[in-house]
Structures are given as C-alpha cells and as structure tokens.
Length: 103
Image (tube, rainbow, N blue to C red):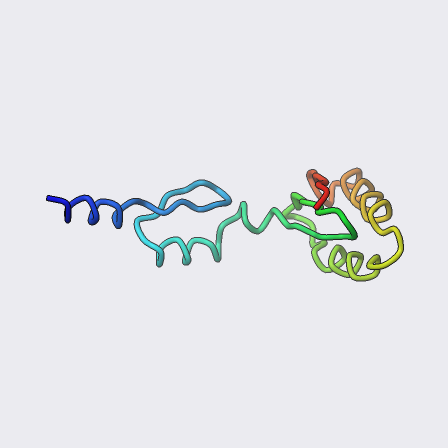
C-alpha cells in the first residue's frame, strides 16, 4: 500500500513558474518553456546593487538595447541611469512596467 503513495507523488503535475500552467511530466514542461509567452516577456537585469525586473512589450524589439545599457553602466552609479532609461522606455511604450529590488 505504501508503494501507491510514492507513485502518486511521481504523477503530481509540474507547474510552469512563469504562467502557472500545469504539465504531466518534465518533458512537456521543458517543451512549453521554449514557447512560454510570460517567460519571454519578463526579464531581469542586475545593475549595481539593484535588481530590475522588466515586463517587455512583445511588439517592440528592445532586449539588445537593454543588455547594452546594462553592460555600459557597470561601474559608475548606474542604478539611477538605468532606472531613468527604463522610465523613458515605459513612457514610449517599449516596456509595460518594471520593478526595482535591492539585492
């Protein structure tokens, strides 16, 4: 009888961290992650002592610009400059929203 409990634990569905959709096994989850829209829209950047989480607008192509800005700002008080750039991008509707957390 105890073996059935172990089997039931193995059959528990796996949940996508990003969109909360459930999958019967790891292979299905991994296949889903390649196409998960929520995963593709949320990106995290670490600049100085802060972590920025950005929700991208899927109609605009701006990932390359954000990565280059992140690389350029390493060193001199980059947090304010990066936050300013994100505010400008939000106003121009390149991104939907962003949050800032201290490491």
